[in-house]
Length: 353
Image 1 (cartoon, rainbow, N blue to C red):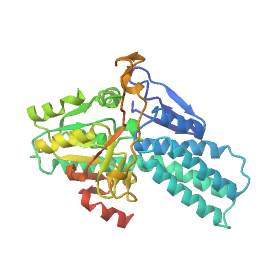
Image 2 (image 1 turned 180 degrees about the vertical axis):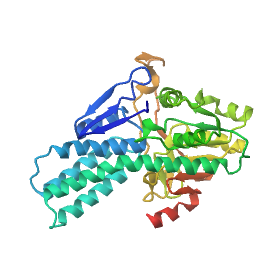
Image 3 (image 1 turned 60 degrees about the vertical axis):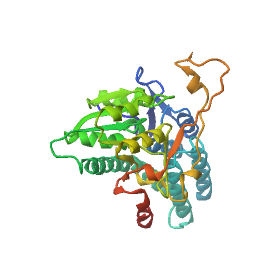
């Protein structure tokens, strides 16, 4: 059975509660924008692409049942609620970009006198519906481009070993995955020997979620602690590191789950190619460099407790940034749905978008 993190059918939205995985599989109904904000903020749904999709679908749930008054009111409601959803997780840019595009669409439709309010609402819902289909298609393209890129310098009879961090698979997207999509494509080509996934403290997305996906899909995987990456690269031949992204600046600097930066440094030292796998919606051309990416800070409890059991000394101060920024000079390439780009070449994507 294929994993399904987002269920959207007949106007009803449910998300797989990722806080409970891998012990419990439970779907949570999302009945509107307020529910959408909460499941994103509480990390019941996470992963930049999935955050954008669930946020927009939560608005779609409300719009289906809305008593429509006039187009101007509908436009204001769309804009206000989308901006509210963006505030749930400030670092991930996908939902910000999706909100900007949908607000622009709402403005355009509201000014078009040939379109009725019901037609405006219907068109808006159709665009949100397509986000699910497009995300899976984009992820499969990312997977294939990434697999081919990694295999370029690998002899035909050799299998590859890949390191990944956090969770970037079906659970973080509409399906297939970004960085884990690259792993899936390597496995499909029968060229994957092993993928090493880090535990990803303090929230353990690697241990709880990526490991869960690898076992479920029967992909050869090995879990390692976050502090084992250097030892792994010294003792075993690693072909590449592939991670996801929550926001990529115009110069290629990339914000991703905390711990990514140190893996990039270790990869550079050991001569291991380091790749970012992300759709174009993760690239924020309005930000020149990583210095300007807002970094979300999470509650202390994520560090001090494990399953409601305190594991840190009471009274200790905590610093818990959810993300760090990997400088572009440590990144070999950025894998998108339209190809692989060196960080300095991202500008080519802006001119075509």
